[in-house]
Image (cartoon, rainbow, N blue to C red; front, side, top):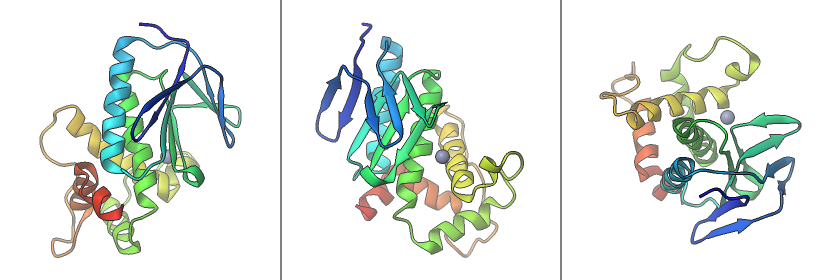
Length: 186
Ligand SMILES: [Zn+2]
């Protein structure tokens, strides 16, 4: 059923808000959703709650504008909030959920774990615009790609650590995806 309401999910409840919502520089604009998109939004909430269970809020909006740019999602550390846009395709909403959840979980990861991810990531995702060279974005994109394989039902893992004696990227990503890290870091 179409709705003109922005939907706000909190950890224990679902709230709705008819007015445009502004969180820092991020503006969530009201609009319409459809049942398929609603289903993806609910799935995205499940993923985010599992990966980063301490988050205060998950906000969905048909459009999210950050400093004039239309974006698919953003993690706002100061208020522990993830905002996701509903305009991309349903699978892309889930990928964005994984990406932003990684940004949230990375704030609580040890330097050793982040270094292990960087070490195994190597040159992947390094080419292109400055956005892709940003280490935080590279790791978030690696995680969303890793999760995307699971979401699409593809077997196997994204990459194999070159350092068999140490905890590697697959173990860290798997612990994040399963919620094991989220519990440990809460
Ligand atoms: Zn990002």
